[in-house]
Image (cartoon, rainbow, N blue to C red; front, side):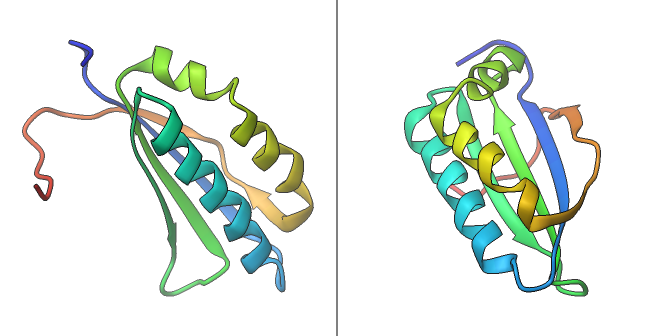
Amino acid sequence: MSPSRPFVVIAEFRVRPGCLDAFLDLAHDDARASVAHEPGCRAFDVAVSESDPLAVVFYEVYDDRAAFDAHLETPHLARFRAGFPALIAEERPVRFLARTVGGAEAG
């Protein structure tokens, strides 16, 4: 495990009406492959807003920035990048954060 604080990525999308299932299929493929095949990927959650079902948020946690940079070169992200532009109405700027020590997680 890296001595640095975990690197958090938040990506937000507004999906076109009628495209949510296709978008989520691509997103879940990327998320599953990231957690399964990237040692530096600690978590990759895909969440849909309860108040706006076309608003989708990715919450990704990596060991460090280098682990995220490695994610950017993966075939599963390439699949997502190839497919998602036709499915979204808007992509908000990606946010990068350093996770604080002392948070709570289920064990």
